[in-house]
Image 1 (tube, rainbow, N blue to C red):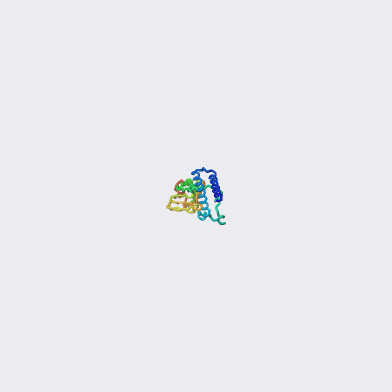
Image 2: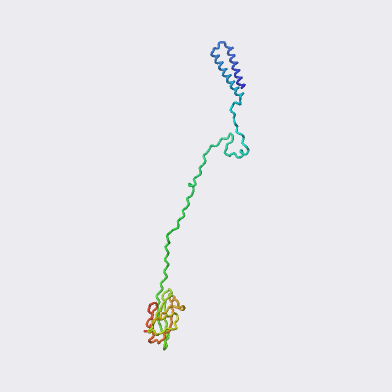
Length: 235
């Protein structure tokens, strides 16, 4: 303000010197000088008015200083005074879970195909048995007979049937060993018992019995083992 007043005074003095030094100043020059002086005076008055009425100016509101708690919780990315604010970057969008998720491995369904059973190996077929008839002991009223049953194969034979046919139904069989005996008229049937049992492979069993009657006229007329004719029958 002092500088402005000093400028006004200096301009007024200059105008005075010009006027007193030159008597032939034109009217237009005077008007210009007076206008310049008026502008300066108006400017000075405006400045003085503003300085004398500061309450009419718009107040400047200042933010209160932050508290100690707020200072401690300031975000780390808040720039300080005079520090350049970092450029804002858009947040990186997380990858979609569907894009990174691994597809579960499908559990294979159990096969519904029924496995073909392996055919069981058929057991070997036993060989056919053979039998030899013989009169082991002869007396006046009876005779003893023996039948040897042979197994030529490797497989044991558990069941067999020996059939002996006598010439008359009145003839009786007794003292049987190695088999069970049953009668049907003149036909006698022998099957294995506990003592003889099965016929082992490449082996033989023996059945003995006694016939009541002399061998002449009482000898068997037929003999079979599993329907195979025996050997050794008397003529």
